[in-house]
Length: 103
Length: 103
DNA sequence: AAGACACATCAACTTTTTTTGATGTGTTAA
DNA sequence: TTAACACATCAAAAAAAGTTGATGTGTCTT
View 1: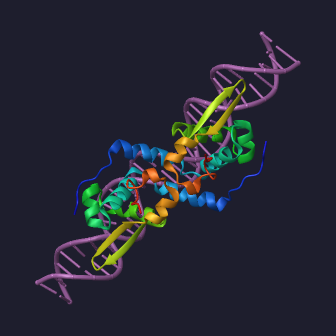
View 2: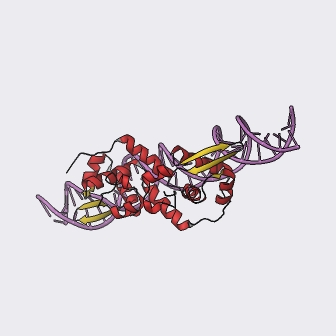
View 3: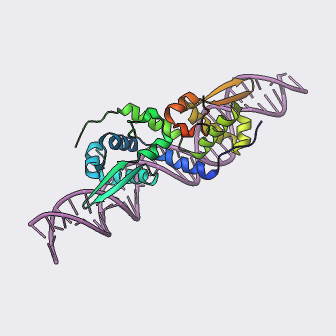
């Protein structure tokens, strides 16, 4: 029985956070919309997802904290985009186009 | 604003389940050990992970339900292995060797 | 300056997940 | 056949995540 292991606690917690952010169908749907629609403002996301404003905000923040999406504030509106580079680090090619956009 | 989206509810729930199973550092550590050590029995996992027996059982079941690991019962012992084929469908190559074993 | 809009944040609540310790089941050894 | 072992399962408790409705902040319009 080998006892040595190669991953450190910090890495585990970091991946835990990333996968936790992906572990909700609302958030996966958000990523899907951002991946297929590109830059989208909260108001449009709210319509597409049929989520209340505060609920949507909550889920966007989680994806943001995981660094899987980015915001640009333009005056009154906030536009969100998928951070495909970060998503690609974690997700398989098979999930390309579904949850992030390809090269 | 485009309104069409391409993913169905069932797919979303399926991915939610998969990612939920990956969203815990104990379970990621289990996968890491299985990926690096290969087939391992619960008793050895319990020592490596320093998890109580029932807690470990709980987490193994979640990974099993997500189809990310498999069991073989040999008499008294249960041996678990990573289901690398399934993991590879979801996880990037970058995570190969960390959470599943390569080709 | 006042109102309307787009969004974030907060506190209270609900739901889900995780932990814990006890009990149950099958297998092996004495 | 009894005891010990390896593990799963269960019910209760604790902790974490998600929801809701209200409030706050910044921007634009008038």
